[in-house]
Image 1 (cartoon, rainbow, N blue to C red):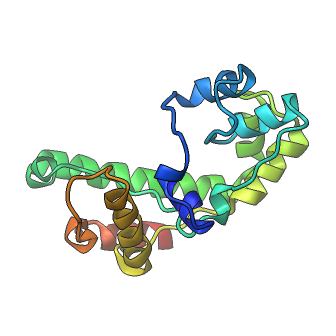
Image 2 (cartoon, rainbow, N blue to C red):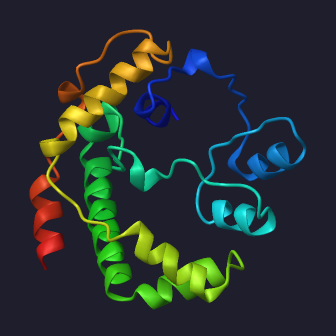
Length: 183
């Protein structure tokens, strides 16, 4: 939300925010308690299909940065067993996304159609719109957008102190990610 507002020159203080769970956004909008909401797919598609006059005004793929980051505590990283488990998890997630990239029709049908009830055409469109997931060695090109996001959180009062995001990255799994993705 902060990135979307910032992209059009607004701040959090320019809007009224209401915290509701993702599954409650539709009811909140339909009940009139809010006129806009942040929604995730496939809930966005379901809402738009049921409310033909509604419009998506900003999409995640239009925002400057769409990275997902695995977060672990310093304690977990310092524990050999937990660090090994994180390495295993990281390997599995890279392989899982490689599988999905190679089998987009299974993603569309298995998740968006069977679980969320979207029409096959919209499911296929979502898979195409969302693009392919790739992994990289952080922080790399992620540093500047991540610092901008941290600065937005600080300016909005969401974090108590200004952060230097570079200090937040642990690069111990970089070689593992790159090797797994390359295999």
